[in-house]
Length: 431
Ligand code: IMP
Image (cartoon, rainbow, N blue to C red; front, side, top):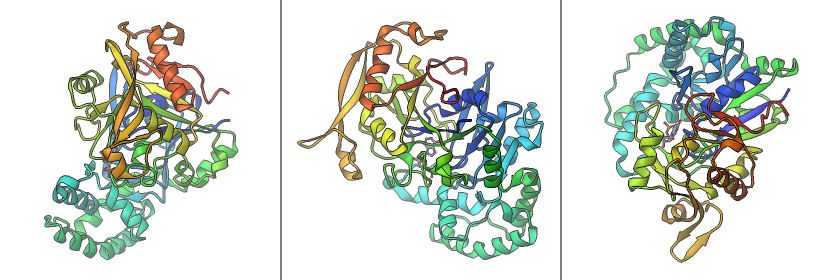
């Protein structure tokens, strides 16, 4: 059975959750392999809104398993809150549905405090992080001083690790001029309690996944954030702290890359970005405001207004390359309805120079402005259109031009928030 990776091809918030939720019908297992509760999926199922930050959206499907892999940084406060909320609504009736890797790193209170304090001091150069402690937790992971889920399950070990790490965290908070509200005994007691709550889900997730794949189960790997926020391949330093590209589906879950059969990149029909960093096709005018209002472009995690702009073919071609995309899923096409014309960035210009591909140097990228190709818009309401051929000719022409510019076929198109409002042209699980 095929194993498929779905990642964001832009700056995050592409509507991956909805596609994952839809394709979960054909998968047995959904895996998160990076990021943490900096991600947020707003799902509308049967008219009801559910926001999930950590647990894969696939949890809404009874009988499917969801894995939080070793590559994720997990805030156990958030995890327990999501578990409680899901259970209250009748989901996650079977604890066996959720698998939490022993090796996922834990977001501790000092990580959140350091993240917020750093951003407060950073001024103009700030990254615009979500303030969830993501960066500091990954730093501790790489510095080999992090706490993992397995450490929460043994109170004596937890107490020892907190004691070891706390002085360094306190020093950093002091340096940042932030209040130190950390009480060692209270932290140990709280995280031991959270450890007891997550114990039913904690296991060797890589082995569990290996066995699932061996037994013929189909796995969907759900990326968080987007390609241009990847710590190696994004617009560094305006990035998140994990690898968001498809290759990390293997590292972040403990399977080998040969187990992956296909990779789908999700893109909006336009573009958005949250936080700082270069964005050549950004619109700061009334058109950008209209995209924000019609598209409801306010962060699911932070509520921040998103920056908006036209679609960027250079960014998508780059995403196609670094992820090895087999297909594109284009979301929110309906948001473009009613624009007299729609544009796609096809080149950049900086000074006297033009670029056909995304420059890898941030300072060059910051100087770039987009050169657009303009296509005619459409006025038809896309609501209720369930077949590709139903779409207005101009909307199809837009999608076809996009596919040609990126060099990747369009496999799905979504035309509304509800999961039924998605046209699947080719299902990667039914090849
Ligand atoms: P962090 O992941 O909180 O450290 O934030 C680093 C950068 O990634 C900031 O620009 C955030 O706005 C951005 N970011 C993190 N998660 C998401 C997401 O899920 N969608 C969009 N942007 C995100």
